[in-house]
Length: 231
Image: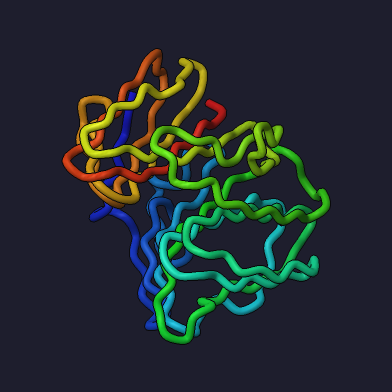
C-alpha cells in the first residue's frame, strides 16, 4: 500500500524571514488527513533569510532532527550546547523532560535551507540530549539514525531509523523492507521511480505491507531520506 504527498499539496507558510513547506499538519496548516505517519510527526522544508532564525523556545518529549541542505545553522540550547551545523550535517536533539533552544542562520549574507523533522519518542521525560554528525555523500543507502546507535549512527529514543539515500543518474537500489514495518521516503532532489510511481523533488510517499522494493533514479542524481517506522 502507498500514499503520495505531492510537493504542490503540502502546507505553506511565509513570514518574510521564513518560508516553509509542511508535509504534515503544523502551525497554522491543518489537514486532518495528514497528521503524521506512524511516529513521524513533522517534515518541514525551511528556508531562512540571512541573519534570521528561530528565537529561544522550548520542547518536551520529542525527537527533533535537522538536516542542513544549504548554508549553516547556529544552534544554542539550555543544556549548554552551542554548535554550528554546516550543509550535509545531521542534528538530533532529544527534548526529553524539557529543553529550550534557538536556531539561527549563521550567515549574514546567504540563505539557510534545512529539513526539520519530528519523531515522537517511546521514552518520556528523560534527560535531554544532543548529537550531530556528517555521514558523507556516498551513493547508496547510509544509516544515519538508529535506536541503538549502531555503526556510529545517532541514537534515537524510538523503534525507528533514518537513512540517507543518494543515487547517481539511472542507478537502482534495493530497499530493506519488512511487511510488518511502515516506511516513508522524502525526496529532496531529482526524480525517483518507486512503487510504479514517479516522485519529484519535495514529494513524499507512505509505504506499508511491503515484501520487496526497488527504487531507480531518473536522469539526475537523487538525494532522499528513508524512514523505517513501527507499523
